[in-house]
Length: 101
Image 1 (cartoon, rainbow, N blue to C red):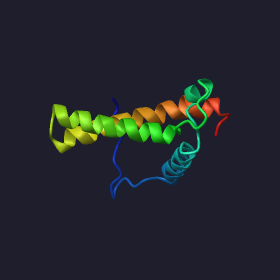
Image 2: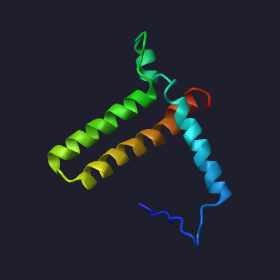
Image 3: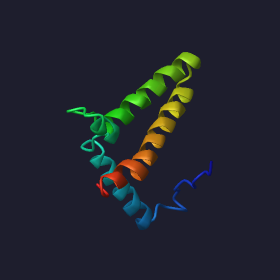
Image 4: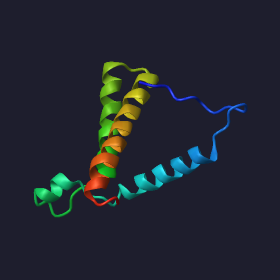
């Protein structure tokens, strides 16, 4: 895993980085209205959204990590990893399948 440099007073965030962050946040906003395609294919009338699924799996990761190791840091890392995984998968799969929602 590559570590990204953190912004500091000597190395502030660039306008390009801010633009990319805003674009990403906008894409994530679409996930709450984007139904999970597998559920649609299965004929589920009111499928959960990609955002609902991602939130639930992050909370499950948080809970399971807490059972394995009660430290807050471990739980945060587990939930962050799940949210990150869900966001990457959504941007590659769901948004592409939905025609770039």
